Image (tube, rainbow, N blue to C red; front, top):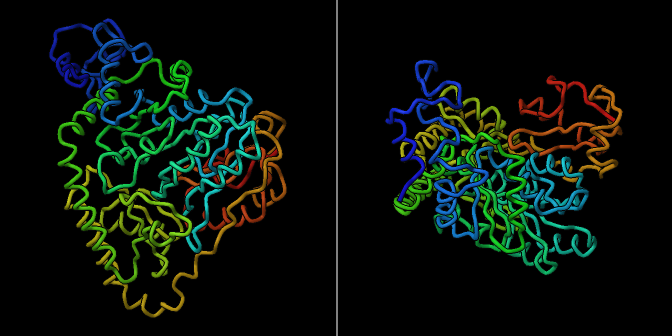
Length: 478
């Protein structure tokens, strides 16, 4: 069986002179640092064409489909961003309506902007006293679809950046009663199908399109992704059309070979790798559960009334009983213990784990947190009566849409001080990053509660992005 990554390695040794792109001409002497220039090729003879695959790239995609058990699978080199743009564009007509989770990645909002779509928002449940968003409820999907027969598709993120999962099977049943497709951004869940330790993947729960960032939790290079078609509700001609629009016409063979190698590893060693990984993960979770001041959050257990299930590969470490913010803990772990967290929120940090983690890595994390506790126990014991009081509940639902995104972004605008923008209609996105979920979108009215939350995020050192003013002092309004 010919594998793309092996064919690239073989081509590396051949005496073929490249009178074709790329401009480094496979000459490593022209590139400082480590770059696999000899394998960085274009669509030459024998290496197929991603946008009209008939040979080795078609076989690479088919193998990925076999690994995941899907109807069809498409390779991605522009991250899940391009796949989300593709899925929404293929499932909803221009100027149509989409039922979409408010806590969706910004690429979903960009798809709505580019296609002129009207969003009908689904709001996740709120977990009391935490910044975590809960799950989406199937009954809310059912209600929204009953109230608006013009909706053409449902878009859900599960798992979220924090690992919170929604009842995709229930959501799909509500949508399929009206023959509507369900698109699931499962970018953070490419690993779910490979171990019973984790919840069921959307692929097996009735979703029609599932999107994976292979690089997030599997051994693959950054920007690699997959779009899985899981049912005949999807027009694959449209999928292919939009993939050619949103993906590069010069796809990286190194990235595509990375996907191929990843799929081979999963096929040949997946059971062994995931057994070792989940054993190490479970040991780490037990050690973390024994800490006194830091608390390992299990959303499905701790917030069972608002969380359907959770991906336990995400280690959510609460700082609420310590007097520290999540950002402060993240900085401390990075600077003193050389541990880089995936993200930090006002009252917690998230350590993203994957099959690539080692027992040593897990031990370093658990020992670091235990060491911090030991050093600060005396200080924290004096303020136990104040623990957990530093994080107020936030307003979840922003004001409604006053104008469409296109009207707000493409109409006449002016800049005002953010502090003086209450009541104005935003012409910009404002996002809390990571994970890149909009706090406000173009066309929505700016509330006092939003401004209060943003001030607090900035004071806590969190990253607010999206505004043209990089200092976050001014905002463009309609």
